[in-house]
Image (tube, rainbow, N blue to C red; front, side, top):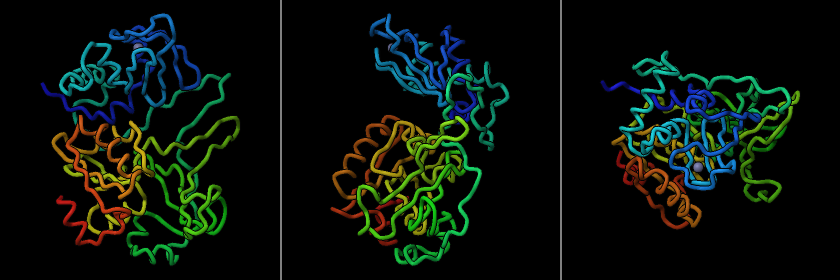
Length: 338
Ligand SMILES: [Zn+2]
C-alpha cells in the first residue's frame, strides 16, 4: 500500500524528543537543545565525546564526529540504516513514524498546516522563541509612496505584498515588507532604504528584525528558516523560481510569474533548500535566477549543490550587473519557459 505522506506536515508534528527516546536516546534537554553521544549506527568518529546535538524545536540534528546532519525523518532513516537520500526508504520510515506518533494525520493529504507542538520550557532556562508570530500589524503604511510606483510596481502588486512606506519607529524612512513564515503567519517586517545614496554600514539597504527580550523570554528572528512568498505556494508545483531579493519576487509576480520565492539575500540555508524541494513536485523544475554578479554566481552554485540531488535545477543566467527586476515582461517570458 502506498500511503500518502505530507512530509512537511509530518515533520512539523513529530516531536523529536519522542523520536529520540524511541531510539533509546537518553534526552538531556537544555532549552531547545539536546547534546549527547552520537546514537547513529554509522557514527565513526570518537565514541566518548558528546558530538551529537539536536534542536528539539526545529527538529534537526547534527554530529560533529561523523558529520551526519538532517531533520527528524532523516535521523530516523539513519537509525534504521536506510539511506535518507533514497526516497522509497525515507517514505517507508516516514509511514512508520506517522503511524506510531501521528496517527491522526492518516493517509490523506490535509490542507491544514499544523503548528509545531508547543513544549513546556524548563524553568531554569531562559526560553528562546524563534520567529514568533507578531501580535500586531504596522498601521498607517503609505502604499502610495513614490518609491514603489517609481520602481514600476502597480498598486495591485503593492497591495498583494502588503508593502508601504513607514514614517516612524524602527523602520522610519523605509519601505516595510511583511514577512510570513511557512504557515503564513506574520513574523516580522523587513525595511528597505528608499534612497540608495544613504546606504552605509549603520544604515544597511535592508533592515531585519533583531533580538529582543520580554518577560525573561528571548525573541529571535531568523530569515534562514523560511522563504519569502513561500507560504503562498500551497501544494507542490511543477515549476518554481528562486531568486535573491524581495523586489525581484514582486517584479516576477507582477509580470505573470507568481510561482516565485525569495531567499532574502545572496545565500540559501539548508532549511531553505529543503523548503524549495518540498514546494516542487518530484519531477518538477527549480529555476534559479540570481543577480548577474559574483555573489549571484556563488549563490547559484550553493543552490545547485543543495537542490540538484533532489530536483531538476535550471540556472537562468543574467547579464553582468543585471537583476531580475531589469528584465521586461517579454524578456522574462523568453527566459522562463514555464
Ligand atoms: Zn555521529
